[in-house]
Image 1 (cartoon, one colour):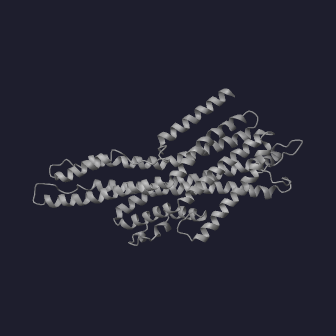
Image 2: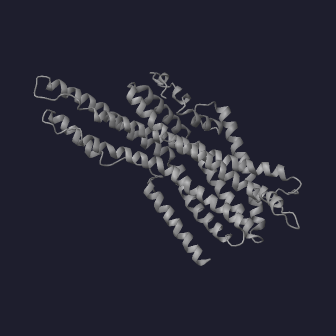
Image 3: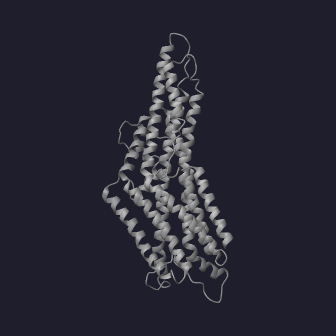
Amino acid sequence: MFDSKINTQDDFNLDIFETTDYKLYKDGMKLIGLWPFESSTKKNIKRAFVLISMISVLIFIQIRFVEELNQNIDIALQSAGTEILSIGCIAKFVTTLRAEDSFRVLFIQIAKQWASITDETECKILADNVKLCHPLCTFYRVMAAFVLSSYACLPSFGPVIMNILLPLNETRQKRIPAPAEYFVDEEKYFYILFSHGMILYMLVSLLYVTIDSMYSCIVHHTVGLVGIVTYRLQNIIDLNITSSPKNHTNNLEIRRRLRRAITLHKESIEFAENIEATYSLCFIIVIFVNLFSMVFTAACGIRTLHYNKVESFRWLMLYGSIIFHLFFNSNPGQNLFDKTSEIINTLYFTAWYDSGISTSNKRIIQITMIRCLRPCQLTAGGLLVLNMFNFGVIVKTSFSYITMLLSVG
């Protein structure tokens, strides 16, 4: 439920992020050193840990990739797959880190917007729209944990399980999560090397889920603002407009309500533009990495389909998670587009054409309707609109590549 304590006039009161609607996302950002209001020392320590931990694993993976490139293409591809996934994640982390000042502005704006809304119904509309992202974010966390743990653990503990269930004349050898060259006996130091490799997968999962979930939360906050605009527009003409002497007074009240709704609508659009500018570079990188990763993982999955079912399953599981990642980032933009598209219908059904409404008010409503013909949408650096239509186009294109690869294979 909405916590009334956030209704404060303190422009920099961030108590809203301590409520259940935001706290989990804020704590995730703090955990990886991306919460802009934390002390610089703590942030830098956490950021250094994340980057050093991931890069330290990638160095050994890259060495193994170079060694196996002309020896064992399957191992080289496994190393390359992990590198692509990790480099994309590091790029996302660094671009988000570089946009720290923009994030600080966004979070302060969110706090100010909550402080400026005092109507109980409007507070509920905003809180309910923020809650819309919770189920999908929860599923994202569970899915990411399951997929990456399965992807990492199958080569490590799959052979152990198979040795028990279907024993052979010789023991199946365990493998560390991603092929890497540590220059030590892999069998002797297996659990140490396994733990080191798992750090990479855990951080990849944590970074993707945390950054994407906060993005979804911020966008759904914008959806909530637009929902309040719709609510205000629905109630601009609930007065008894007649030709009575009160007509002038009623039109002044309509003008006041229109001004409040239009001001918030403009603020919502500007806030959405700030979100797009903040995430612009991040999404350009993510989209290109996703497109390449989808084709790469699908090709590797199909390549191993006929002689290594377990490895093929790992690749296709990773392929499915990449599709979901793209879906997750497209869904908030679609919700924002749909919500802003509702405004023009709301205005149309307000009986703005009533003879009792002043000409100036009618003109304002008409101008607002014209502006609402262009719903708000989010893009990846202006190159790709983040919505479900383009998500479908990308997935359809990837399926076409898979079909082609299957026919060739």
